[in-house]
Image 1 (cartoon, helix red, strand yellow):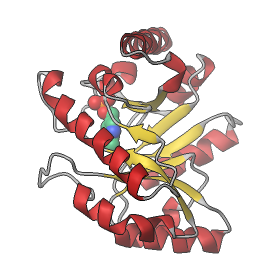
Image 2: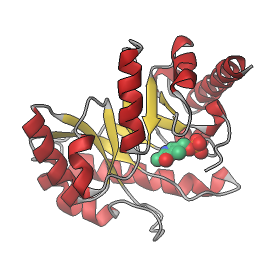
Image 3: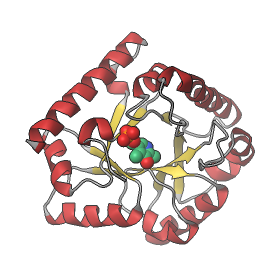
Length: 235
Ligand SMILES: *Cc1c(COP(=O)(O)O)cnc(C)c1O
């Protein structure tokens, strides 16, 4: 049955997260699991919520808003929504919503527009800066140099609170191959802390189904996991 499968998958993922944290000398509670529910129905989200999972990630604003409203109608108020996908600059107003965290601020222009729209909506948004560590042309994000150059400007935007960094590693059959990417994000976090101590650079959102254990070993504070919980998507 669908619900049984989701609950079992969640338990398995949580156990693997805890084991990876412990073997790298960290506490399981220091790693937050964002269950990536894109393409899956609210019924699946409700199942996971009943099993204690509160953080959910979506990568499209339209789908995210439909789910936010449907969840509200069903009084699933404990859900914390995360926006993890690319935001087009004409869509920043839709991104300035009731979200726990926006992981995907991938350029200065988006940061400026989000800040402006959040101010207009009377809120301050918690955001992460998405960094394209691998330099892959198909990936969105700041380069490390761009983040270091724009740090002060980004921290000064009144409508956003920069909480840390996010990256998407290129898919690799062997997750060990992504270890240098995660390590590089951690190194960048240390450089930013040193150069901009006024910022809160606490969070490292890195690691997906294929590579989350390696990401945790390298310091991930948030992992974004979809298929290991809800099943393989046919996108
Ligand atoms: C889809 C997605 C994930 C989850 O991917 P899985 O491989 O299914 O775990 C994580 N992060 C982002 C940004 C995504 O779009």
